Length: 584
Image 1 (spheres, one colour):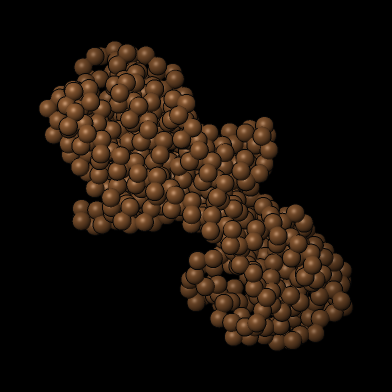
Image 2: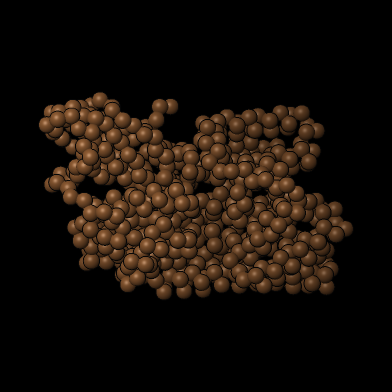
């Protein structure tokens, strides 16, 4: 066990050591654990375009646990990731205990060894996200499920573990579905008392999740339904996730080797004459097939390989079953053949982890850390400089590494000419407020709306590539459409209209005092930044002397360009712009 855990921990810690900066979703994790319970729930409850709001569309259980860990061990990149490594190693131990108690001690060692070196488990045990915790809680739920089926006890522990599982990741619903199907398939319906207790546990799970159900519906409503018109379309879509589950992060030949070994081992397990081995194979195959079928027919959940991490233990057991079975039966030559395929599968996963480690290490070592962006801004940025970010998640990433307040505007720039025009119009208005732009774009995510213009007008602009971001320094003049004269307060006059560019502060508020000698029409060009507030949607309103005179609905695509106009009578007025939360 010491050797097994040393290998498991060593692979995970080595992968963590190769990583550099946090990436976008990890930065969001770091942001969310800084909030108290009320703000955390509010952030996670935001409906609509989740990517644009830089929050996660998942339940909240992971973040308070990580916050407790950070409070005990510190808040750094390595510490955040070690939390996942901790539960990754615990998952190996729990799988071993589950197999030893409910299946076979020999199978327990082989299954746990396969899980220890699983490239997918290793990778997501080195990332500051919830997948490793979700895997552990899935195994805990399954452990107490088997306790209920075999020994008719453990209902309270099962309810607690499964509730935490569902509050960690929405795919916990597939875990519950699989357990219900298996409960009836294993004859749980024959005993009225056992069936009654099981139904009560399911009712308890439903009641426990009811408080979060409205949020769940809002999150699913933000994504279009995935339709699989035929099995061929479904299998075509699942081809890449299947290969990645075999040897995550490995080259295509390595993934094919692992997949071939897996298929041969599973086939030999299914063809076994041992009824006990057949029952074991059927159980773990069902653990894989049931969620896949549910996904095929519901078609409501995006296909992401990482979401299927709860299937990895079943794969580890299935590749181990023939080896353990033939060894126990004394069939040496068959055990040797199965052991060779098993070793090939493990070697492919270790190779995939090494390849991932090499790529990650090369990427992190060949680029400066975002922590150095602070020094660059201190040395080069002037008092009228601003940081412009192209994507919603980038602002969270930058915020993790900037230790000073620096003017920042973020755009969520989806493809489309209309959105591009809106962004470029906003940039033109910003050019009237700031002299210098520091443009931040996400590497490998397509062109920013301003890419062509910058390339044409500022080809020699300062450009620094970080691990996940690219920063360019340009003069705001290249975005300026016309030069306008403004008074000291920032107002411009033209065609009997007094206009001004308004940048909302972190609280989404702008205040000013104005005085007119005659009735004047006022126009405010509002560039809504990423405000440090919630929710990320509502009503943008213009108020004069406390009275609302104009409004416009805003969405989650901060920053956006909005226009507010009103006619003001002569005299002094208090002018305010703010974002009002929508009525429930």
